[in-house]
Image (cartoon, rainbow, N blue to C red):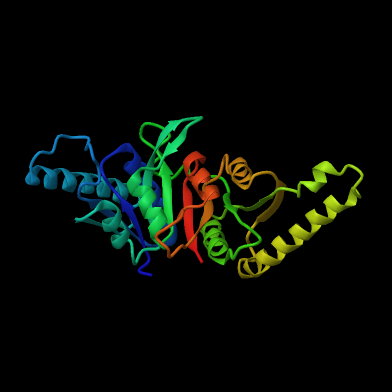
Length: 291
């Protein structure tokens, strides 16, 4: 890695929110902030940019103004800016190949509908193996530029039946950078037989919970040893995993979910849990690709 945090910038409030979050993240990591504008990033840009020269001038102004704000709020931060061409999803994916993460903005649709992750963002999340962080512009201007709104725990959703080392490594590292608690959530649903067999030994449910908790503890144990100062709250909760993660993440600084890497061109590349969290969590969401 080049110790770099890359953010896609298009001049919208959503990308401004993403840039502010990315600047704070880069400062925490001691990394370079890489502001990238992809040509044709917006189908309907906020300003009428009819000619190539006008587009170039507009893009450079957006990059310059955002870089100046980042340097003003984070004086020690190294900030790079660049313009890249090509299909936006491919251009940004390529731009972030040597970065620790790629940060993108997403637009609020309302408390029920959630957030819109546009086609470019969805394509990037589905294809890149770099961590992608989606940042919400909840207010008009998005997160405060000084990171004051970046409070709360880091929440990570895990599946004890799947490899989770990449998720846990990222989540523990983020909690360590922020000096905040880490909440690890595993949601599960009891087998249907427990609902239809009232005479079944009532202790079997408790035994299942103990077994699942033990498996989760064993999964987390190496990371607790690597980060002995971490404040870790492991939760085994009954219910749909996405709902349990969203409930735990209501006041989180960051939510971390996984995405299985699929080499085939067919089938969904973003699972239902990651999809639900991406579209409904208010906090920034990090999507971590893993085998």
